[in-house]
Amino acid sequence: AATGKGNYRHFMEKELHEHPVVIGETLRQYVEPATRAVALPPLPFDPAAVPRLTVTACGSAFLAGLVGRYWIEGLARIPVEADIASELRYRDPPLAEGGAALLVSQSGETADTLAALRLLKAGGQRTLAVVNVDESSMARESDARLLTVAGPEIGVASTKAFTAQLSVLASLAIGFARARGRLAPEEEARLTAALLELPGHAAALLEDGRTIQALAQEVAPARDVLFLGRGNLYPIALEGALKLKEISYIHAEGYAAGEMKHGPIALIDPAVPVIALCPSGPLFEKTASNLQEAAARGGRVMAFTDAEGAPALRRFAERVIELPRVDPFVAPILHAIPVQLLAYHVAVLKGTDVDQPRNLAKSVTVE
Ligand code: G6P
Image (tube, rainbow, N blue to C red; front, side):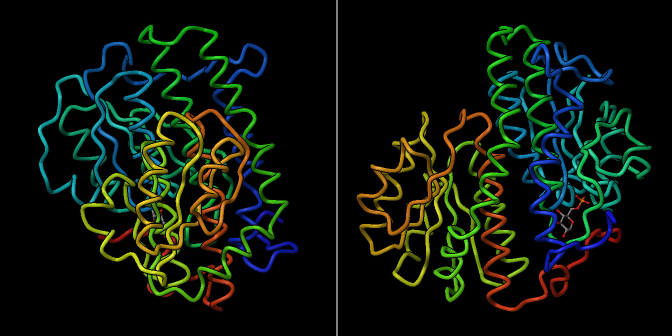
């Protein structure tokens, strides 16, 4: 049954193994496989004319929204503001005339996000909700909704809903870019092809469980862990840290790699694993040099990269984990999977209640 654990020890483990199917099913809603063009349902605003977007959410859904900001700004050139819902709702931000808002939520019921939706609507923004529950309050109250096809998510810490949210946001960014005349059909086909390859890559990653389990053995004894990433992988560093905190109770921080020198570098010592997201691509050299600085100070760098990035990182990193080489546009979706798996395996080693971590609720419907 959809609500059983099957042969898995935890719902979270089962849900992690659903990444390939969920990414594939979600993309099927928004990408035409034959033409490889993004096909969006009618939107409540014109992406070619919208002056500004506000993205808001809570928890992991907010981190998906942060990746969305990189994608939408980078590809479609629409200015995007991203803020957590509990801040946005009391900040009384000036809203652009004719602006629009994206709400991201698995449950569609999170109190702060729902309050932000109402505030944004009252402020004249057109609202689009990316939700996993079709009959939810956010789905009903927003001007339009885009569904993630993640199925029920039982584990309190979000997993498959996160990659499904990313899949929708990537499709949106491509659709917006095309609507604004900023994406040639060949380029669109190249990006959607990269998206459509993700289920296969995700399945391969999940099949080889040992690499991440071995990494988890190194991380489990740590008191503090630092996650570093740049660009569209910075929010995935935040997600890695959030997930580890949530379910293993190890203190973790996610940082933009370039910001490390302004603070967290003071924490670096051999007791603090530094988990780096550093695939090949335009930002590789920059991130690699930040990691080298960490290693030079005795930091134990454990890097996720690909075959092209691996040799340079092996010169100083304690562990280098090769992921499939993908277009940098889709790297956040791919990298989300091993950081979530890492948190899962660390939590199992620590014997915590993986599916029901202390003090946390699946859906926070009170303020
Ligand atoms: C809780 C969950 C998180 C989730 C957040 C937002 O804190 O533990 O995993 O990301 O709520 O939930 P939503 O349903 O709005 O995505």
